[in-house]
Amino acid sequence: MHRTVTILVLLLLAFTSKSQDTLSYAEQLKAIEEEMDSLSIFNLIDSLFTLDIKPKSELNIRFGFTTNVTSAGRDYEISQSGISPGLSYYHKSGFYSDLAGYWNSGIEPNYNPTVFSVGYLGTFNNPNWSYTIDAERWFYNPKDSSDNPLTYSVGSSISYDFKWGFASVDYSLLFGEETANRIIPNITGTINLGKWWIFKSINLYPSASMMIGNSDITQLRISNREISDRNADRILRLTTFANLTDEQKKYVGTIIIRAYRNGSITEDTRNQLLLDLRNSANLSDEDQVALQQIVNEGYEVTEYIDSNEFGILNYAFTLPLSLKTGSFYFLFSYTYSIPVQLPGEFIEVDPIGYFGASISYRIPFK
Image (cartoon, rainbow, N blue to C red):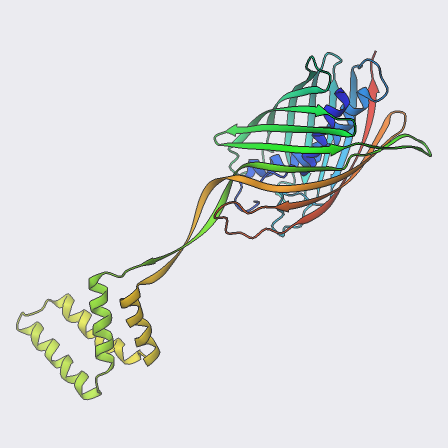
């Protein structure tokens, strides 16, 4: 029962939390952390309940790798891989703590951050229902000059066991100078493949999950605006001047100078009229048509606007393979992530697939 509750943490392999270009830096790191740590936490707690009638306290040492680090299920065509060493301790009372480091080839400095977390794993009166509660603190590399508005995380999850697997819902709140929310419903199957060679237990945990939350995005806004009466008059003047002959232009120039000398117009008006008269010589027929269209219909304005939107961020399908010897755990997984554009999101997102692997060594205590 406890065992299947903790398998839900594996699904955070597909927890891809939001755009390398528009996300806050701390949230990008959070995405890395979730993906790398999902493998290790699964190994730690799954090992506690696989064969034991009663859980025991345990220390777990691990090393994980993923071929592609994503954010909210998006890699934004940035080639990067991630590595995560870590150390976890679980107490048979249900409390656990974890210390992990994260190295990412696509971020400077490469090593960043170090994450400390504590949590509790428990069950309700009904043995099919169970839950976890956790809190995290992120310590950033001193060489990191980026703004890191998110430094803490609290979360909880609830899970229900079925004969063939389990279903769960996970919620996380990231906070600091800013806040972000993540809700992850998922369903996971359990397939026991038996034993083979030196491995005492081989299991597949196919899963499907969906991530819902808020994300900083860039929106493309195109609007139509009317020009001012002053500019409309100037365009009309330019197109009128453009249709004059050279002799007519000379005559108009003489009239403008004469009007200035007798005080009918100001110096600024004189200069503007003479400038328009001179520039009109460069207007082609196409230019005149385009300018007249602006007068009649207005003009388009393109704006890039940063906003925070809430919605479905991605769907993910994960196929993890777990192999266990006496004290070693090996976990290999493939994840296919399908990002979903938030309302008004300008950047296009494409499905991506990537592999992950981890090795863990368990040291049980009586």
